[in-house]
Length: 179
Image 1 (cartoon, rainbow, N blue to C red):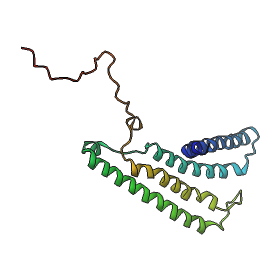
Image 2 (cartoon, rainbow, N blue to C red; image 1 turned 90 degrees about the vertical axis):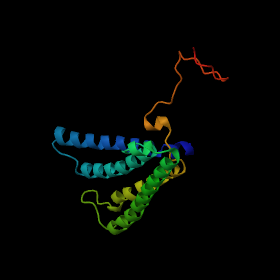
Image 3 (tube, one colour; image 1 turned 90 degrees about the horizontal axis):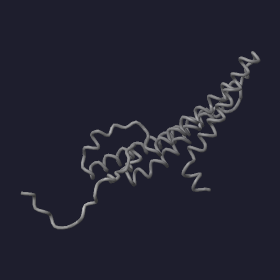
Image 4 (cartoon, rainbow, N blue to C red; image 1 turned 180 degrees about the horizontal axis):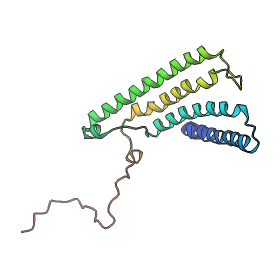
């Protein structure tokens, strides 16, 4: 259970938050259009949930290597330099993620005394999505530092399969060309 939660935390938490976001948005619509009396807290709450979803989604995309990348030049490099470039890119992403943690914590502390207008909760709860997302991204970046080459299926490519009609090559002496 713990391993499954660790391996799929973003999917689980993101899915739960998405359900909550849809439920709150539905409450807002029903209140506004059916009862002509929208619930005041729903818009603010939905904004908080959306902020958390953004950073969970960024971590999930990093984990699945789904962030936008241009690999045309990198793919042309030989294997060793290609791995080095990918490791450097992962290190740069790790630095940015750690920067999100550090500055996100500072942002939370700076805004801890500020209350939201309707819910009257500390704005630190909203801004906590920044360091939490940064920490998740940093953790998801570590495997890419160790193994920078994505598997073919991680890059949207199908693994090479032998052609069913093709005979397997037999090892042996090379045959002379036909005369």
